[in-house]
Length: 401
Image (tube, rainbow, N blue to C red):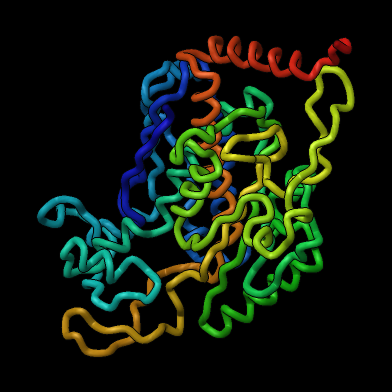
């Protein structure tokens, strides 16, 4: 079982993640890990903080001489902005001598759409900062670090992950424009919004600019595509083992995600069955899998991978911090007041796509270990090869009876 926990606040000293369940003997590429963290910080529409932070991960446990030991892997991602927040975010009862930064006042005006009000009521906080610091999407840096390790495990077995942005506000990639894994993987990392259609991308940029000028924010949608997964991950025998459900939960728990689709997603509800279900054709040759001319199911049927690319869509709402704030109230006085303004982004859909890759990778790595489990990479490789051979034999031509 692969599992992880994170800790840390948006403007605290560090983010912490502990990943339990990685097998022993996996060679880790820390540079690749940091590259994923850098990808999360990119994208047109991000705020000023991205110019301050340059995230990198420190592995402090579970790895020796570049290889996992089988013990939990612990990661730190330090906040470079901590120097400006020590007087506000110090964990000590009294402010330490020499604490730097500025002492900020209490936050008492919740932002509509954020965890501010619900969190303050739930935990009884007077200062909403005790909510917003943990509820901030800054926490997703830790998830991306964990997801990088999971995708390195999958890569050992030829599994690749890519994503693309399919919508910003009402500027949407047409349904008829199916994006292949190769296209998504070929998008330049410095592309401002990581959209496969350059003309549409310019319209998306214009929409973000207009929202910024209006003091507003924009959401959108992204698709994560996973190539090279073997059939048989997940299960149909119990509700909590269905892989599409596990993936949906993992993407839905990303900040600001309000909907998840698999394959066609919501579009499947608008079509007749003949235009939804993927036909099964005879294998092209001995040892090959049956041919599927379409992939509307998104690589899963009955909660089980079928060997096609897994495709997961995330739908992101606009960010809840508006520079022209919505109406709210001051919890200290219960008088109507504009919502608080925190440093934020205009649009973070490309960043959410990277987090989506991380969460999808984590869930698939967990399902992979569930299917081919072992305590070491070598043991998992033996199980993987054995299963692959069984599948190959199943689709080898048989002599007529």
